[in-house]
Image 1 (tube, rainbow, N blue to C red):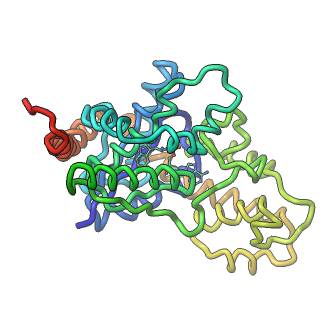
Image 2: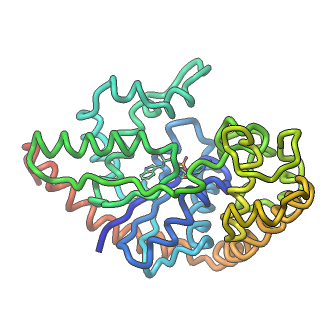
Image 3: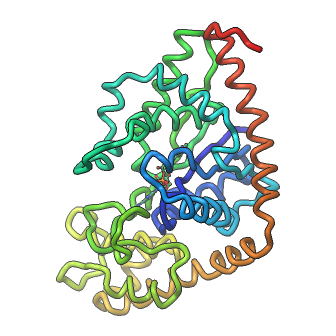
Length: 327
Ligand code: TYM
């Protein structure tokens, strides 16, 4: 069975972008792959986090994994910091990656731009991410489009290690959705929808109340035309809303075009809002149930045990190959 690993940062409220770009594929892949899904809390602290918020968001993301449909009896769900091998192999990867490679990362450039001081961890972030993936010898990594560059570095580091120290790591492949790999902001279709955008109107959070979702969609920016047509180059706002609709209502883009022909944006946006509310309602109910049940601690403990077994073995063998004296 092929192995799958992915992670999400607990650095804000998860959005529809995270769901469509990544989590939907986590749920799909768990049925016929050996899956590891984690909350990457060590990555979240590459930008300052308030301790109480970090704790709450970490538990919220873990609960959202389950609420979205990940079955902990099929996939291991865990926190990155519960498996110390991530930090250990992360350090090893930091010694293998080149400064020039890190300097080219657009995520670093975006996050560092305009900041007076930037933590070194934000710069070396991709080395830790490579470790996350290589520890499990993952074949596939389900992610959105914005993580492609990090996957490239991971592949390069796997190959670099293998050629220097002998075959050890599987070279992973990204698994990116054909439609929905990059959901854009509701207020600016040139920017991706992001959980760290301070304007709440720019994104739909998975835990937004139905009326908040309706309001955000009715205020979403569109062009001044009235044709519901998928044309990302000329109509990026409407095309983005159509992508969201297609995922939430499970209908094709062509069917959406046919359904709203000649009707303008009003009816389209109204139905879109109900499609999003309908898609998120069961998830929100499950989320409440899981948080109230107190089950999360047990699920995360079990996930970390399963993940730790594989990760510890991989890091041990990597150290042996590199010439470390093992205890
Ligand atoms: P993060 O936490 O920013 O996002 C989690 C996942 O959601 C995807 N995503 C999107 N997809 C479509 N449209 C959007 N607007 C959108 N916004 C986010 C991301 O591509 C990602 O798949 N570096 C990673 C976390 C990470 C990781 C890993 C991922 C750490 N280690 C190992 C995979 C494997 C990140 O910052 O994701």
